[in-house]
Image (cartoon, rainbow, N blue to C red; front, side, top):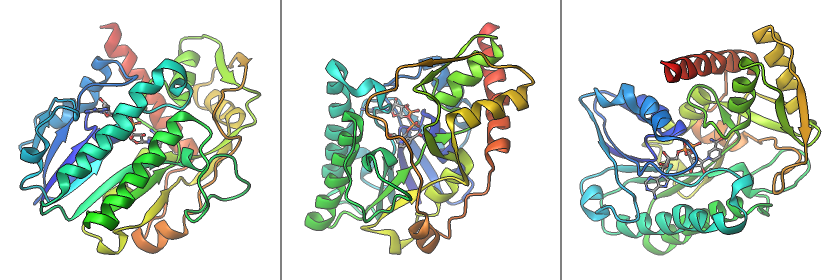
Length: 318
Ligand SMILES: NC(=O)c1ccc[n+]([C@@H]2O[C@H](COP(=O)([O-])OP(=O)(O)OC[C@H]3O[C@@H](n4cnc5c(N)ncnc54)[C@H](O)[C@@H]3O)[C@@H](O)[C@H]2O)c1
């Protein structure tokens, strides 16, 4: 199978490429334009292990300009993970980049899938489409994003829907819930917290730290994402991919103190705008269609991210 992965040098994309290459009959073409909040050298670190793989090819191009028809011609499946991530930075003049990389790029890719033999187009969406809701978030709820980021990702979902219903593009939408673990983006909270704690700096927390998230460890997210491939029952569906545990930000910092043996200096700042107070994934559809069952506890997952952060910044110092 020839599989296209957009956003291959990113956090989730690089892990997904590695997982797909475990299938001995798979070849993977990763496309990445080196765009977004993560510095290039971190992406180089992400993608390093893949570059030597004989069944992996990297195309370093912006999807807005890349020759998509040529790239998709003999592809069997597309995982579309490229995008401009991050809720807090999607306001103001930065919005344009969100509109371009999350909306226009998705439309261009879907358009290029017409009249191809693509069997699945899998789109990485987000729990941010839900907005503020009580209890578990299930896919049938009406989305009401609180941020421009969530709006652009929801627009991408709608594009998938209309290209599916109008042109028969076999789209699948996955809604990821706060993914963490090795290679997590430097702008994301666990990465920032761990880096600050290891450097003996105060930990900066948006709001009072009682906000909670359904945290998804990267290998669980990847298992759920990979399980979509070749699974025809998922076509036209929207499926949550959440984690094993939810916790508050304050709980996470306490866990970090326990795991590092360091006392955190907690510096509370104004709440971030555009973020819900709580997220909690209903995983019934993921269980039904993907036999999805997240395995990694927060304690195990955070311990692995701490190891990664130590290595990343040690390498940077050299
Ligand atoms: N990380 C999470 O917790 C999370 C949660 C929900 C949804 N998502 C979604 O999952 C996807 C991957 O997220 P991530 O955390 O790995 O982000 P990331 O920034 O690490 O990866 C995204 C990659 O897409 C690439 N990219 C962006 N625009 C591009 C373009 N026009 N052409 C080519 N490449 C382009 C970037 O260079 C980057 O390497 C995103 O679509 C994001 O919205 C992530």
